[in-house]
Length: 319
Ligand SMILES: Nc1ncnc2c1ncn2[C@@H]1O[C@H](COP(=O)(O)OP(=O)(O)OP(=O)(O)O)[C@@H](O)[C@H]1O
Ligand SMILES: [Mg+2]
Image (cartoon, rainbow, N blue to C red; front, side, top):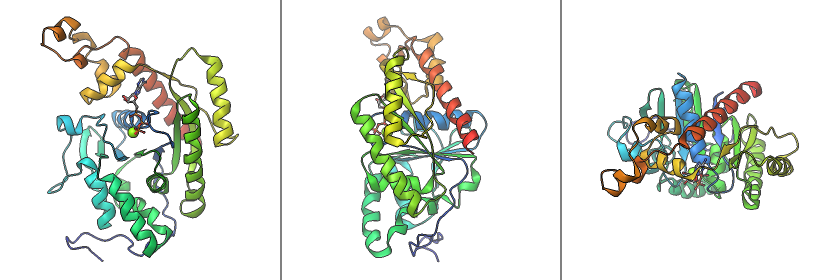
């Protein structure tokens, strides 16, 4: 069966039979906003691609943070004749029930489906279909991913907080879930939501889904007493057996903000340090604030590299 443009239509019946997710498909998710999901997802994808693995980043998020400079700096090759920006690519694939068409080579080995405002409409499509087709609609992303998944060694999903339908859509397509959290109460509470969605999806449509672990993000690396207490909170919320990662990426607002504004990953931004502009250049109108590369990008990029390495090593052990 095909749609008007001749693309094959994927399982229009909405049946709930399981689709085995690709081996290296990892979702970054928690039910709370602003804890570092998009930053970590972009860095996992970037590090994976830089290590030579064919990688796909899928951002099921209503906000496009553009950590990779796709929109601002035109990185990557758009699919022919259509745009994948602003969540359009994701929306079209789900709405038309066709394979995903990512933006290719955003970095060497890295293809991306960016998030954006159009992703919010996916929830409406799912809601309408749910009434006619039943719970199998949650597999819509998994179905659109399946035809292109063999092209990739790793697939990383970024996810939207506080939206059960979109969280479940991602979990239905992923093999593992990795959960970032900040130390505050509401971030810990946010894990309850992803935990609930994890159980529902695993039970109903994706028995392959595994909890790969959780980690504390954006914290003072020397606050070790507090880290122990947060680890206890994580285990209480996600279950005693939840693996908890060691690496703590510090809270370093200026380099994190600047790197995102530049559309660069932390390691890429750190490479600009030797030729940084000065505060004087900014005052004189010759440079922008984000052109002044702070020294703190060095520890930030090192910590992020440790985190992504730990996550991938941990995944190898889980696998
Ligand atoms: N290590 C860090 N230190 C300080 N700020 C950071 C750090 N990493 C990321 N940030 C900033 O924190 C903010 C939230 O990060 P991010 O967008 O990754 O979170 P999120 O969980 O994806 O948020 P949302 O739920 O809104 O999608 C961003 O402004 C980001 O630039
Ligand atoms: Mg985000």
